[in-house]
Image (cartoon, rainbow, N blue to C red; front, side, top):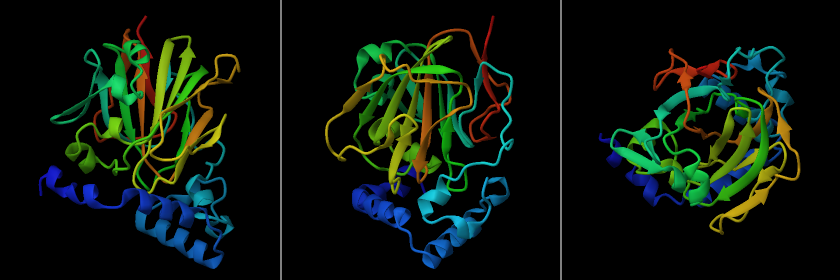
Length: 282
């Protein structure tokens, strides 16, 4: 079935209601019921609990606690690289931004300006720059880490739709990542500015950052922004910066310059937190 036809039901589904219900279920502390749900999820998706700091399924009081579980120390060594992969997951797309156009999938592009919530001045900093779109599947570790050291400057919440972000939906829904709800985090680094976008999706209860906690303005409300230039929020390479309460996608933007992505990268390739993402040529 063509991808555009396969995603038609998503236009009809009550995605906000489903997402609200999923958030209630995921945050509830249901004792044996919660443990049973987690056990079913681990079996269905093949979650590797041996990598978790706490591998005991019965120890998690809620599904969210399980879903945002920490890794045991040393599970993700950091490569020696200018930019490291910030998540476990798979590569959706990566490469050059063509003026302000980001490649989503065959036949689909979207604008940098739309992705960052309509801020043309912010988007202009990444004209002809570089992007990477990374998909987190249900089985993956769902904390997000810093690709390089950075100082937080702004955080922007952009309301939007709640389509799924799986590969088939990316091929079937135009402008998917600039349509869905998202949190745009703007950093300064020694390499220049960069943006890390947390993209929401169907049944993603919420998104959280380490400096703010859960980012949950009323869905359907206006774009909201927080300024951090005077707060001196600094994170080092590999530090946790946020997490998904149920899974989604991360989009990274880097400015124009001599960035060289890992030669082993290609769309569809599995990735792990801490592996080399890119270096900056001398």
